Length: 118
Ligand SMILES: [Zn+2]
Image (cartoon, rainbow, N blue to C red; front, side, top):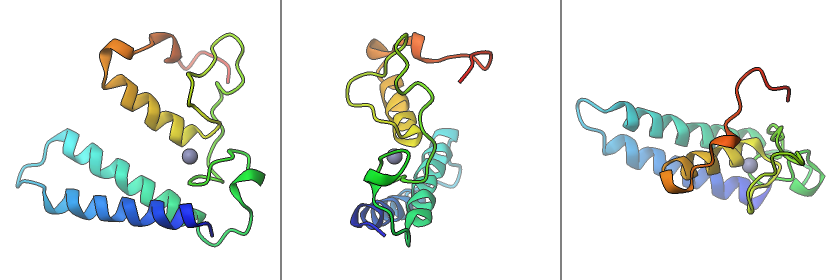
């Protein structure tokens, strides 16, 4: 169990509670998606609790998701990940969605179709 996992769990649960209590009687799709995203973070962090191995020894090298998936684009010489991206697919996915909310910084090359090999 790492300190980062616990912190991530507390942060995500607090945020989820705040989001849930702020919901209107007819929440929008965006509200629901945001809540699901935060709850997934909490679930991932909770799943990481109790592990003895540190993030450095994990495949992702991620303190929050040591047992998560490795981004298939990590180390791809033809389509390198942007600066600041790591091996963790969950964290990179979050970064991509954050980038996608800023259309001027959107890089469409990064969104590959299902026909691409991993
Ligand atoms: Zn991660």
